[in-house]
Length: 241
Image 1 (cartoon, rainbow, N blue to C red):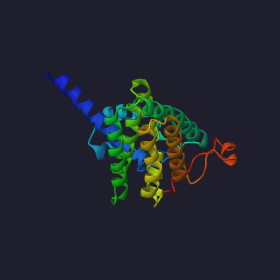
Image 2: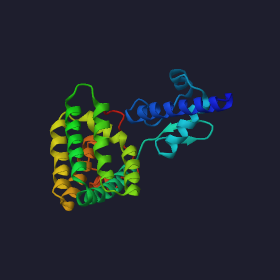
Image 3: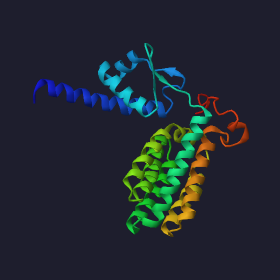
Image 4: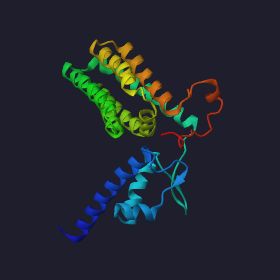
């Protein structure tokens, strides 16, 4: 392998690693909303150069998890109620359709896999200090619904929405002591409806799961009249766990 090629591959690997770790830090609240990333601290912590760091941050900018401020750096934005509402309404629409199609198209083995993932989510929710595992398991559950549509475009759209909802999922998981009971109440109807090929019930169950997660994360209903008329106000999550 030539030296130039080796350097490029090493830089790419560092950028991928930086992307994963910075993204995790944003979603888990390690990098506070409304603040700039401290480039020198991150470079020192991750043992990477500026190029991999900036490549990672540009990817996160494309995913709307960071903003680029000229001559100042990368900024972790505070989402407005409008931004959160728009994102969740879009997820409800897309995942609701996905649940309907999954109910109509899923193979029995795929439904068995979804039920196994549901049990994995419940197990993760009962473990100590396992928020990361819970988020990963919950993400796999919902991504599987997308895969069960047998529609790759829909699956890819849902994957992007779930990634952008990651911060809200973390807040929901870390702010409610009733998570195990809620997950059983919210996820089991999704599995049951899809297994019964009841597309309408599957749609309603997914929407209820998303709505309850939003209430856990923000402590308020963003579809209430008060929230609708203050949609440009920032969603404050700094004081939450």
